[in-house]
Image 1 (cartoon, one colour):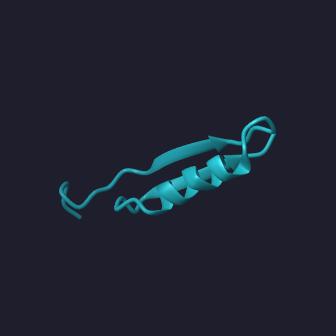
Image 2 (cartoon, helix red, strand yellow):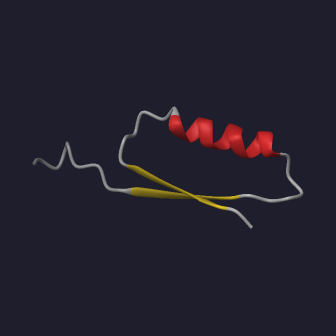
Image 3 (tube, rainbow, N blue to C red):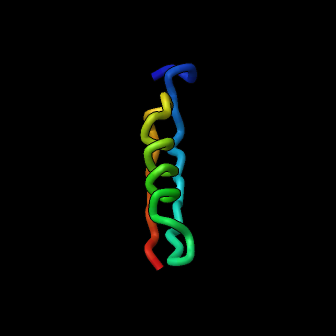
Length: 47
């Protein structure tokens, strides 16, 4: 493995909020899923 190919793990935490429309949370998750970076850990916290 070379340094050029090493992609560190990026952790993204998305908090849901009962006062925020669910569509915004889904838009956020979809946006993260469309990224070119592949070594992503997505954590969704409800409440």
